[in-house]
Image (cartoon, rainbow, N blue to C red; front, side, top):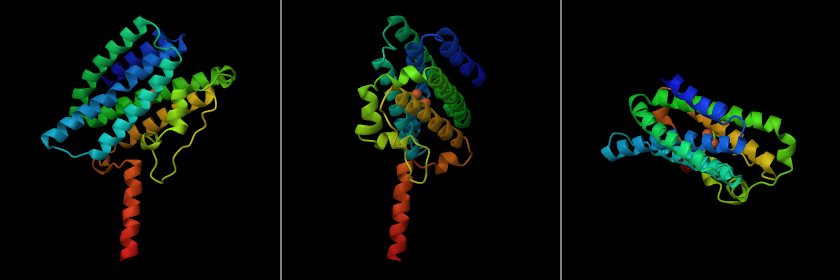
Length: 228
Ligand SMILES: [Fe+2]
Ligand SMILES: [Fe+2]
């Protein structure tokens, strides 16, 4: 089933939209962020029923939707959503994806994270190929304002939350032109792949901490040691 879902995603992104880059990335970003919505819905349901309290998972998955939202806003600012047909296709696949991933995440969080690891890896390679084939032209075009705000000038807390690090070393990327923007998006997808991989480990869903929670824990421990 996982293979079928991923193959369908790859078919839409690579075959149907293979030669229209920004519409392709718009469709990719509209669909690929939806599993995070499904995870959040299920985690909120568990929290409501009092089954689990997984605040760090909620926090990081929300930051991932925020990150993907900004990828989507960047593609929209580049005209990727101009055609009604593209918006119609992307939104309808997104609704179907949401309802496929909700029961999958309830039955097996591990497989749901594995599905997302494959989708995110595909997104990483899609952007990596785009960077290699369009390097010169991308370097001559300006970065959209939404990207400048998200990666450099705005509040970077949410951006940091999606980074797979436990040592307080957050990426501080350049956003000088459109090439930099696509490098940043590609690297974000790489962070998502690492997070999805880590969450498949059996103990991970109990012990997982967001990067900022790790910093707070280290600060608390340092305080306890200095008081002792
Ligand atoms: Fe993305
Ligand atoms: Fe992603």
